Amino acid sequence: MATKCLRWGICGAGKISNDFCSAMTTLPSGEHEIVAVAARKQESAQEFADKFGGKVAYNSYEAVSKDPNVDIVYIGTIHISHMELSMMMLNAGKHVLCEKPMGLNLKQVQSVLKLAKEKKLFFMEATWSRCFPIYEKIKAEVASGNLGDVELVTAKFSIPIKDVPRVKEKALGGGCLLDIGIYPVQLACMVYDEMPEKITADGVLNEEGVDEGGCVILKYKGGKMANLTYSGRTCFTQCSASIHGTKASIEIPDRFWCPEKAMFPSGEVTNEVPEGRHPYNFNNSGGMRYEADHARKAIMEGKLECAAMTHRHSEMVMSISDEVRKQLGVVYDVD
Image 1 (tube, rainbow, N blue to C red):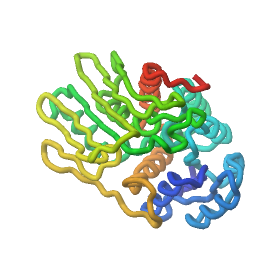
Image 2: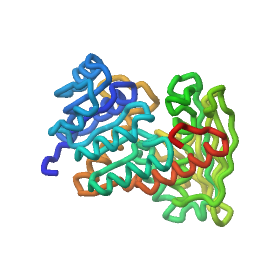
Image 3: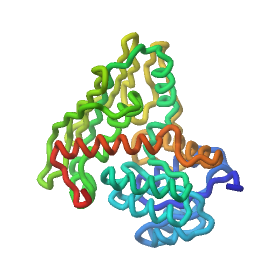
Image 4: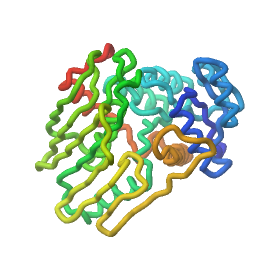
Protein backbone atom coordinates (compact mmCIF):
# COMPACT_ATOMS: atom_id res chain seq x y z
CA MET A 1 0.00 0.00 0.00
CA ALA A 2 1.46 3.32 -1.04
CA THR A 3 -0.30 5.56 1.45
CA LYS A 4 0.48 5.76 5.12
CA CYS A 5 -3.14 6.56 5.96
CA LEU A 6 -5.48 3.57 6.10
CA ARG A 7 -8.78 4.42 4.42
CA TRP A 8 -11.76 2.70 6.03
CA GLY A 9 -15.16 1.69 4.73
CA ILE A 10 -17.68 1.00 7.50
CA CYS A 11 -20.45 -1.59 7.02
CA GLY A 12 -23.20 -1.02 9.53
CA ALA A 13 -24.20 2.16 11.34
CA GLY A 14 -25.20 0.59 14.63
CA LYS A 15 -23.85 0.70 18.17
CA ILE A 16 -20.69 -1.35 17.68
CA SER A 17 -19.68 0.59 14.56
CA ASN A 18 -20.24 3.81 16.50
CA ASP A 19 -17.89 2.65 19.23
CA PHE A 20 -15.24 1.47 16.78
CA CYS A 21 -15.22 4.76 14.89
CA SER A 22 -15.24 6.80 18.09
CA ALA A 23 -12.29 4.77 19.39
CA MET A 24 -10.41 5.49 16.16
CA THR A 25 -10.66 9.21 16.88
CA THR A 26 -8.18 8.65 19.71
CA LEU A 27 -5.47 7.49 17.29
CA PRO A 28 -2.95 9.86 15.67
CA SER A 29 -4.44 11.92 12.86
CA GLY A 30 -3.27 10.95 9.41
CA GLU A 31 -3.10 7.22 10.18
CA HIS A 32 -6.79 6.35 9.79
CA GLU A 33 -9.56 7.93 7.74
CA ILE A 34 -13.22 6.96 7.36
CA VAL A 35 -14.02 7.47 3.70
CA ALA A 36 -17.28 5.51 3.26
CA VAL A 37 -20.20 4.33 5.36
CA ALA A 38 -22.95 1.91 4.36
CA ALA A 39 -26.19 0.98 6.10
CA ARG A 40 -29.51 -0.51 5.05
CA LYS A 41 -31.08 2.96 5.08
CA GLN A 42 -29.53 5.93 3.31
CA GLU A 43 -30.45 8.34 6.09
CA SER A 44 -28.75 6.15 8.72
CA ALA A 45 -25.60 5.94 6.63
CA GLN A 46 -25.57 9.67 6.00
CA GLU A 47 -26.11 10.53 9.65
CA PHE A 48 -23.26 8.21 10.63
CA ALA A 49 -20.96 9.60 7.93
CA ASP A 50 -21.68 13.16 9.05
CA LYS A 51 -20.95 12.22 12.63
CA PHE A 52 -17.57 10.66 11.91
CA GLY A 53 -16.40 12.63 8.91
CA GLY A 54 -17.09 9.98 6.29
CA LYS A 55 -16.86 11.36 2.77
CA VAL A 56 -19.67 9.30 1.26
CA ALA A 57 -22.72 7.39 2.51
CA TYR A 58 -24.30 4.38 0.79
CA ASN A 59 -27.48 2.39 1.32
CA SER A 60 -25.73 -0.63 -0.18
CA TYR A 61 -22.84 -2.67 1.23
CA GLU A 62 -21.90 -3.63 -2.31
CA ALA A 63 -21.24 0.05 -3.02
CA VAL A 64 -18.51 0.02 -0.36
CA SER A 65 -16.89 -2.97 -2.04
CA LYS A 66 -16.76 -1.03 -5.31
CA ASP A 67 -15.47 2.23 -3.82
CA PRO A 68 -11.89 2.67 -5.13
CA ASN A 69 -10.98 4.91 -2.19
CA VAL A 70 -11.53 2.16 0.41
CA ASP A 71 -8.51 0.14 1.54
CA ILE A 72 -10.08 -1.85 4.38
CA VAL A 73 -13.64 -2.54 5.47
CA TYR A 74 -14.83 -2.81 9.06
CA ILE A 75 -17.87 -5.10 9.24
CA GLY A 76 -20.08 -4.22 12.20
CA THR A 77 -23.39 -5.68 11.03
CA ILE A 78 -25.32 -8.51 12.69
CA HIS A 79 -23.20 -11.66 12.60
CA ILE A 80 -25.48 -13.71 10.34
CA SER A 81 -24.22 -11.45 7.55
CA HIS A 82 -20.52 -11.59 8.43
CA MET A 83 -19.49 -14.39 6.09
CA GLU A 84 -21.35 -12.97 3.09
CA LEU A 85 -20.00 -9.45 3.58
CA SER A 86 -16.47 -10.63 4.29
CA MET A 87 -16.40 -12.61 1.06
CA MET A 88 -17.94 -9.71 -0.88
CA MET A 89 -15.23 -7.35 0.31
CA LEU A 90 -12.39 -9.82 -0.21
CA ASN A 91 -13.59 -10.59 -3.73
CA ALA A 92 -13.53 -6.84 -4.39
CA GLY A 93 -9.91 -6.60 -3.26
CA LYS A 94 -10.50 -5.02 0.15
CA HIS A 95 -8.77 -5.89 3.41
CA VAL A 96 -11.25 -6.82 6.14
CA LEU A 97 -11.63 -6.39 9.89
CA CYS A 98 -14.80 -8.33 10.74
CA GLU A 99 -16.54 -8.24 14.09
CA LYS A 100 -16.69 -11.46 16.02
CA PRO A 101 -18.03 -14.01 15.45
CA MET A 102 -16.81 -13.93 11.86
CA GLY A 103 -19.17 -16.79 11.01
CA LEU A 104 -21.82 -19.04 12.49
CA ASN A 105 -19.72 -22.20 12.36
CA LEU A 106 -16.27 -23.51 11.46
CA LYS A 107 -17.24 -24.17 7.86
CA GLN A 108 -18.08 -20.49 7.34
CA VAL A 109 -14.90 -19.37 9.11
CA GLN A 110 -12.72 -21.60 6.96
CA SER A 111 -14.42 -20.44 3.75
CA VAL A 112 -13.63 -16.80 4.52
CA LEU A 113 -10.05 -17.47 5.62
CA LYS A 114 -9.40 -19.59 2.52
CA LEU A 115 -10.59 -16.75 0.27
CA ALA A 116 -8.47 -14.19 2.14
CA LYS A 117 -5.38 -16.32 1.59
CA GLU A 118 -6.21 -16.83 -2.09
CA LYS A 119 -6.70 -13.10 -2.61
CA LYS A 120 -3.57 -12.30 -0.57
CA LEU A 121 -5.53 -9.80 1.52
CA PHE A 122 -5.42 -8.99 5.21
CA PHE A 123 -8.26 -10.46 7.24
CA MET A 124 -8.77 -10.28 10.97
CA GLU A 125 -11.62 -11.36 13.20
CA ALA A 126 -12.14 -8.38 15.48
CA THR A 127 -11.60 -10.13 18.79
CA TRP A 128 -10.57 -6.82 20.28
CA SER A 129 -9.48 -8.29 23.62
CA ARG A 130 -6.38 -9.76 22.00
CA CYS A 131 -5.10 -6.32 21.01
CA PHE A 132 -5.19 -4.76 24.49
CA PRO A 133 -1.70 -4.12 25.85
CA ILE A 134 -2.61 -6.13 28.96
CA TYR A 135 -3.32 -9.17 26.79
CA GLU A 136 0.02 -8.76 25.05
CA LYS A 137 1.69 -8.64 28.47
CA ILE A 138 -0.21 -11.73 29.61
CA LYS A 139 1.11 -13.68 26.61
CA ALA A 140 4.64 -12.52 27.39
CA GLU A 141 4.29 -13.41 31.09
CA VAL A 142 3.03 -16.91 30.31
CA ALA A 143 5.85 -17.43 27.79
CA SER A 144 8.47 -16.16 30.27
CA GLY A 145 7.88 -19.03 32.69
CA ASN A 146 7.27 -16.67 35.60
CA LEU A 147 3.97 -18.46 36.31
CA GLY A 148 5.53 -21.89 36.03
CA ASP A 149 3.41 -24.38 34.13
CA VAL A 150 -0.09 -22.98 33.61
CA GLU A 151 -2.58 -25.58 34.80
CA LEU A 152 -5.89 -23.70 35.11
CA VAL A 153 -7.63 -20.85 33.35
CA THR A 154 -10.92 -19.53 34.72
CA ALA A 155 -13.22 -16.90 33.25
CA LYS A 156 -16.79 -15.80 33.87
CA PHE A 157 -18.79 -13.39 31.74
CA SER A 158 -22.34 -12.56 32.68
CA ILE A 159 -24.54 -9.72 31.50
CA PRO A 160 -28.36 -9.60 31.15
CA ILE A 161 -28.85 -9.77 27.38
CA LYS A 162 -31.07 -12.84 26.94
CA ASP A 163 -33.98 -10.71 25.70
CA VAL A 164 -31.98 -8.82 23.06
CA PRO A 165 -33.51 -9.90 19.68
CA ARG A 166 -30.20 -10.80 18.00
CA VAL A 167 -29.34 -12.95 21.03
CA LYS A 168 -32.65 -14.69 21.65
CA GLU A 169 -33.79 -15.42 18.08
CA LYS A 170 -32.39 -18.45 16.26
CA ALA A 171 -33.02 -16.87 12.85
CA LEU A 172 -30.61 -14.09 13.84
CA GLY A 173 -27.88 -16.53 14.87
CA GLY A 174 -28.94 -16.13 18.48
CA GLY A 175 -27.40 -17.56 21.59
CA CYS A 176 -25.10 -16.10 24.22
CA LEU A 177 -22.17 -18.33 23.28
CA LEU A 178 -21.43 -16.49 20.04
CA ASP A 179 -22.12 -13.13 21.66
CA ILE A 180 -20.29 -13.26 25.00
CA GLY A 181 -19.22 -16.90 25.50
CA ILE A 182 -16.57 -16.45 22.83
CA TYR A 183 -14.59 -14.22 25.19
CA PRO A 184 -13.83 -16.85 27.85
CA VAL A 185 -13.08 -19.35 25.07
CA GLN A 186 -10.62 -17.06 23.31
CA LEU A 187 -8.77 -16.42 26.58
CA ALA A 188 -8.20 -20.15 27.10
CA CYS A 189 -7.09 -20.47 23.48
CA MET A 190 -4.60 -17.65 23.89
CA VAL A 191 -3.08 -19.07 27.05
CA TYR A 192 -2.82 -22.71 25.97
CA ASP A 193 -2.37 -22.08 22.22
CA GLU A 194 -3.76 -25.51 21.29
CA MET A 195 -7.02 -27.39 20.95
CA PRO A 196 -8.25 -29.15 24.08
CA GLU A 197 -8.36 -32.93 24.18
CA LYS A 198 -11.86 -32.94 25.66
CA ILE A 199 -14.72 -30.43 25.72
CA THR A 200 -17.59 -30.74 28.20
CA ALA A 201 -20.50 -28.30 28.17
CA ASP A 202 -23.93 -27.81 29.68
CA GLY A 203 -26.29 -24.88 29.66
CA VAL A 204 -29.79 -23.44 29.47
CA LEU A 205 -31.75 -22.95 26.24
CA ASN A 206 -34.66 -20.62 25.57
CA GLU A 207 -37.92 -21.52 23.85
CA GLU A 208 -36.30 -21.00 20.42
CA GLY A 209 -33.55 -23.46 21.18
CA VAL A 210 -30.62 -21.08 21.58
CA ASP A 211 -28.46 -20.83 24.67
CA GLU A 212 -28.97 -18.28 27.42
CA GLY A 213 -25.86 -19.40 29.26
CA GLY A 214 -23.49 -22.25 29.76
CA CYS A 215 -20.58 -23.81 31.61
CA VAL A 216 -17.68 -25.13 29.57
CA ILE A 217 -14.81 -27.31 30.75
CA LEU A 218 -11.81 -27.64 28.45
CA LYS A 219 -9.30 -30.38 29.26
CA TYR A 220 -5.87 -30.15 27.67
CA LYS A 221 -2.99 -32.59 27.49
CA GLY A 222 -1.14 -33.05 30.75
CA GLY A 223 -4.31 -32.46 32.76
CA LYS A 224 -4.43 -28.71 32.16
CA MET A 225 -7.91 -27.23 32.42
CA ALA A 226 -10.07 -24.24 31.62
CA ASN A 227 -13.25 -23.54 33.56
CA LEU A 228 -15.42 -21.10 31.60
CA THR A 229 -18.85 -19.69 32.45
CA TYR A 230 -21.07 -17.32 30.50
CA SER A 231 -24.63 -16.16 31.02
CA GLY A 232 -27.07 -13.71 29.50
CA ARG A 233 -29.56 -14.41 32.26
CA THR A 234 -27.91 -12.72 35.20
CA CYS A 235 -25.09 -10.34 36.07
CA PHE A 236 -22.12 -11.07 38.30
CA THR A 237 -20.72 -8.12 40.22
CA GLN A 238 -17.44 -8.83 38.45
CA CYS A 239 -16.64 -10.55 35.17
CA SER A 240 -13.23 -11.82 36.11
CA ALA A 241 -10.58 -14.21 34.86
CA SER A 242 -7.50 -15.86 36.27
CA ILE A 243 -4.52 -17.79 34.97
CA HIS A 244 -2.98 -20.16 37.52
CA GLY A 245 0.50 -21.62 37.19
CA THR A 246 2.60 -23.86 39.40
CA LYS A 247 4.58 -20.82 40.60
CA ALA A 248 2.23 -17.84 40.41
CA SER A 249 -1.03 -16.49 39.00
CA ILE A 250 -2.44 -13.60 36.99
CA GLU A 251 -5.78 -12.12 38.03
CA ILE A 252 -7.98 -9.88 35.89
CA PRO A 253 -10.45 -8.65 38.50
CA ASP A 254 -13.13 -7.21 36.24
CA ARG A 255 -14.08 -6.89 32.56
CA PHE A 256 -11.44 -9.41 31.58
CA TRP A 257 -12.40 -9.05 27.90
CA CYS A 258 -11.58 -5.31 27.92
CA PRO A 259 -9.40 -4.85 30.98
CA GLU A 260 -8.10 -1.66 32.51
CA LYS A 261 -5.90 -3.53 34.97
CA ALA A 262 -4.56 -6.95 35.93
CA MET A 263 -2.57 -8.30 38.84
CA PHE A 264 0.71 -9.94 37.85
CA PRO A 265 3.19 -11.59 40.24
CA SER A 266 5.24 -8.39 39.97
CA GLY A 267 2.27 -6.13 40.75
CA GLU A 268 -0.54 -4.26 39.01
CA VAL A 269 -0.43 -3.77 35.25
CA THR A 270 -2.66 -1.21 33.53
CA ASN A 271 -3.51 0.08 30.09
CA GLU A 272 -5.31 3.12 28.76
CA VAL A 273 -8.96 2.95 27.69
CA PRO A 274 -9.38 6.43 26.20
CA GLU A 275 -12.57 8.39 25.74
CA GLY A 276 -13.46 8.94 22.09
CA ARG A 277 -14.94 11.97 20.39
CA HIS A 278 -18.44 10.53 20.77
CA PRO A 279 -19.98 8.55 23.67
CA TYR A 280 -19.60 4.77 23.69
CA ASN A 281 -22.42 2.25 23.93
CA PHE A 282 -20.43 -0.57 25.54
CA ASN A 283 -17.92 -1.04 28.33
CA ASN A 284 -14.41 0.25 27.66
CA SER A 285 -14.97 0.60 23.92
CA GLY A 286 -12.03 2.98 23.76
CA GLY A 287 -9.93 -0.19 23.64
CA MET A 288 -11.15 -0.82 20.11
CA ARG A 289 -8.47 1.62 19.01
CA TYR A 290 -5.93 -1.14 19.58
CA GLU A 291 -7.41 -3.51 17.00
CA ALA A 292 -7.59 -0.71 14.41
CA ASP A 293 -3.94 0.05 15.06
CA HIS A 294 -2.97 -3.64 14.89
CA ALA A 295 -4.72 -3.92 11.53
CA ARG A 296 -2.96 -0.87 10.16
CA LYS A 297 0.48 -1.99 11.28
CA ALA A 298 0.02 -5.48 9.85
CA ILE A 299 -1.13 -4.11 6.49
CA MET A 300 1.73 -1.61 6.34
CA GLU A 301 4.13 -4.50 6.95
CA GLY A 302 2.55 -6.56 4.17
CA LYS A 303 1.11 -9.17 6.53
CA LEU A 304 -2.11 -11.03 5.80
CA GLU A 305 -3.12 -11.66 9.39
CA CYS A 306 -2.68 -10.18 12.84
CA ALA A 307 -0.29 -11.89 15.24
CA ALA A 308 -2.60 -11.03 18.16
CA MET A 309 -5.56 -12.90 16.62
CA THR A 310 -4.35 -15.27 13.94
CA HIS A 311 -6.47 -17.21 11.48
CA ARG A 312 -5.55 -20.38 13.36
CA HIS A 313 -6.99 -18.96 16.56
CA SER A 314 -10.21 -17.91 14.81
CA GLU A 315 -10.55 -21.52 13.68
CA MET A 316 -9.72 -22.79 17.16
CA VAL A 317 -12.31 -20.61 18.90
CA MET A 318 -15.02 -21.61 16.43
CA SER A 319 -14.09 -25.30 16.59
CA ILE A 320 -14.64 -25.22 20.34
CA SER A 321 -17.83 -23.18 19.93
CA ASP A 322 -19.21 -25.69 17.42
CA GLU A 323 -18.67 -28.55 19.87
CA VAL A 324 -20.21 -26.58 22.73
CA ARG A 325 -23.29 -25.82 20.62
CA LYS A 326 -23.51 -29.48 19.62
CA GLN A 327 -23.53 -30.57 23.25
CA LEU A 328 -26.06 -27.90 24.20
CA GLY A 329 -28.30 -28.79 21.25
CA VAL A 330 -28.11 -25.41 19.50
CA VAL A 331 -28.42 -25.95 15.74
CA TYR A 332 -28.51 -23.28 13.03
CA ASP A 333 -29.89 -23.68 9.53
CA VAL A 334 -26.37 -23.42 8.08
CA ASP A 335 -25.00 -26.29 10.21
